[in-house]
Length: 134
Image (cartoon, rainbow, N blue to C red; front, top):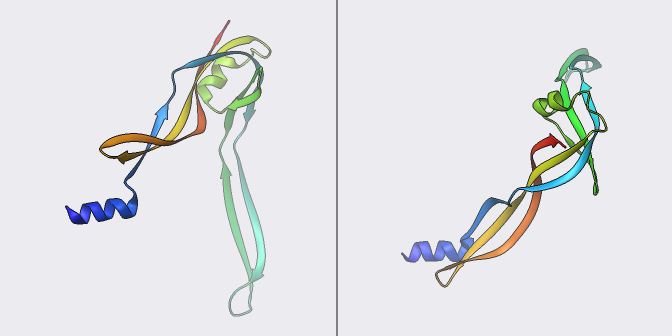
């Protein structure tokens, strides 16, 4: 028991959890639908090895295709990179939508006198859920 108490005091026994807000909606529009095809690049590098001999090395890089939708809302623009959303919004530039999302928080709790108390709550991102045409 004493070891646990000492460890708790040293580590402060904080519990960090991810929490979600209720679902919010916002009125917006489809600003742009963007597709970037995949590509493969090979870079040739000229240099020297550890013994001072000339050396040629190759770096292969594969960049996967990307699908994104840019939504405009009263607060500005934001980008969602999901193929399913891209497919649903393709060809609908400028159309009004209702955007559904949640706020994602990192909350830290501490046990004080046997009670769990919230000591910090930080917004870390928005969780886009869906967009439906109006």
